[in-house]
Image 1 (cartoon, one colour):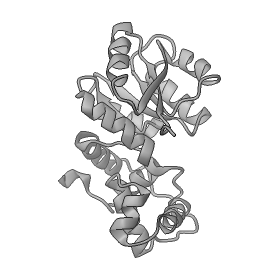
Image 2 (spheres, helix red, strand yellow):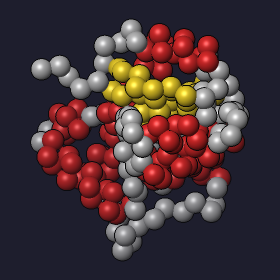
Image 3 (cartoon, one colour):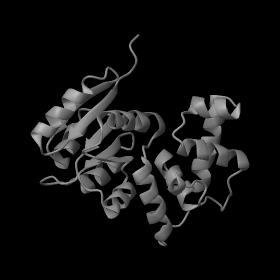
Length: 222
């Protein structure tokens, strides 16, 4: 039985860029480009009939741009993850897109290996933060006094939950976390669900943001 391929959509108004990306991604047997289009509005329409796992999203496009499209896609399709591909390396762009719901942020001049690694990481763990994005998020979130941690009933994480959360931030899979802590994958999922409830996070990326805000991890020292 063939393993399930990661279904991808390419959203970029430059046709040549999309064709190049399709050719590159097509070399990997684990990936499948389901559709490509030129702006966010087209993507939202196509997603109604063509579900995908990952959307590779440009920022500057006519009509519905990448920022608005990211917000709408993550709201309408919570199981779809958006990775932004942009020419902008500005910190404000990065923090804003992560707050909008993007699960990863890459520059368009990234190496093919990093793009594929980002897709696989987002598919398996729910996020991909390279060193640059991690440092930006750390500094940006710490300086943003409006963004405060949310608790359910002001519950604190247990020592074991913090250990699990730190391994999640290191992009470890459920199996890898279980092996590192000598617990079963089912127990890992139990801790993960408890972390979601206690932090008020909706997904893995939210848990990572929580960890950064509360200084449970320090990507800035990496």
